[in-house]
Amino acid sequence: MNTRLLPPALHLSERPSSTAQWTTLGRALELGHPEPIVVDGFAPAFLSRSSRALYRGLTAADPVVRRAERFDGDQAAGALTGMTDGSALTQDTPAPAPLAGGNNG
Image 1 (tube, rainbow, N blue to C red):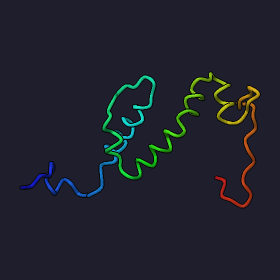
Image 2 (cartoon, rainbow, N blue to C red; image 1 turned 45 degrees about the vertical axis):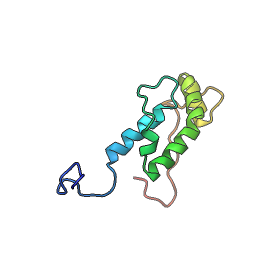
Image 3 (spheres, helix red, strand yellow; image 1 turned 30 degrees about the horizontal axis):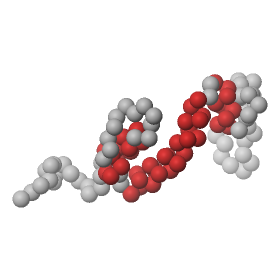
Image 4 (cartoon, rainbow, N blue to C red; image 1 turned 180 degrees about the vertical axis):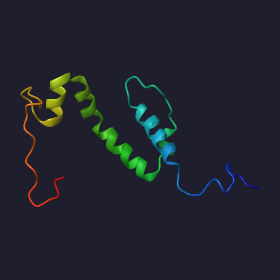
């Protein structure tokens, strides 16, 4: 008995669908959100090995990301770029110098 959902001609690879993996990762990440949009307790069980590694990294960084989300405007830019004095890059800020010996254009 053939249990494949798709005919072999349409299923060209043994790897999981990229779209399915990204969707499942998003559902798994929602579980840690204070106000989740989707609650899918099974999502982490269906992550591939590489998606699980990404999931662990993102959930470890989650408290820092949540803290940055609470800042407004220049404060957020300063927190994310290391400028804690409240200054942020403006249009008057000069562009960085080109790298020596490289293709800069």
